[in-house]
Image (cartoon, rainbow, N blue to C red):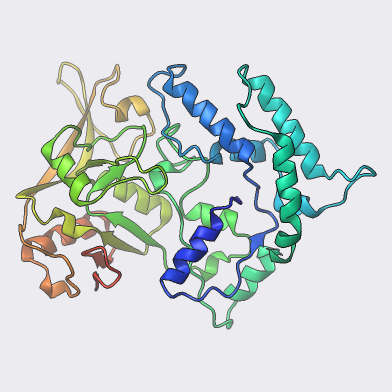
Length: 375
């Protein structure tokens, strides 16, 4: 999916002194228009106003959902279409599609699309075309050559959003519009060979967070512990700037994520945020307890049913089982060796590793790049 924000990612890489030889765009990438951004805001605004009470998604309002919807409905505009042929009036298929999308959304929203102008958007993209054309590539032969045996190349693919926001495996409908796990990498990058994937590293915080709506069984809402995690961890949404909801580490979620994604290793981040806690809890199991508490059903995996996750159903109430650890209450910030961690901190890490059955090869102990333990 293409938006102007791509350039900011390039700037971030250069700030890390990573050489960017050439930025390119896939010919198959869907274009996320300003129109999609307007529609996203209108749809989320309707939820916030109560048309879908209790179902506010917490979208970033960047147009991602509407863009995916149009792509799946086969009415979107992929990059290649921006450069395809035009009719005798000089109108391309991409322009016809954008005009039809605008008409369709106008019919959907009785109040109109605000200040949005399809003419201005078309003019803008006509000015983009000449600059973009040299940067359009077919990703399949490019990735296939880079990941083939003997190529001598390493390809790093970084995903955005955690598994709980995956359109299939996440807490639907409180999810994003794409596959955020390993499957999404393979589906979205034609030419990336499955057999060429050597490692799948799951990035897991030492506690659990969430932005926006949706169930959060281990959330520490309106508690000192939750506020401390949010404050010390500087937990704000990267796009929206909203405060992240914080809670104890949920190993039911982590194990589920590891099973779905096939992690070969885990990078446990922000261990140092727990330094001041005298007591630390970790969720290890979910159970459904009948309302009269006469029956207890232990759940075998992370459930799909939102009523269960949100705490109460006709069958009973969700009960979260915790393992409690004594806090190490000493600074781990900047530790770069496993042996430098307090014994109680090492015990915490080892418990997570054994429960999930995936080796923790990296441990983040601070905000700097060098604040990392490699085991």
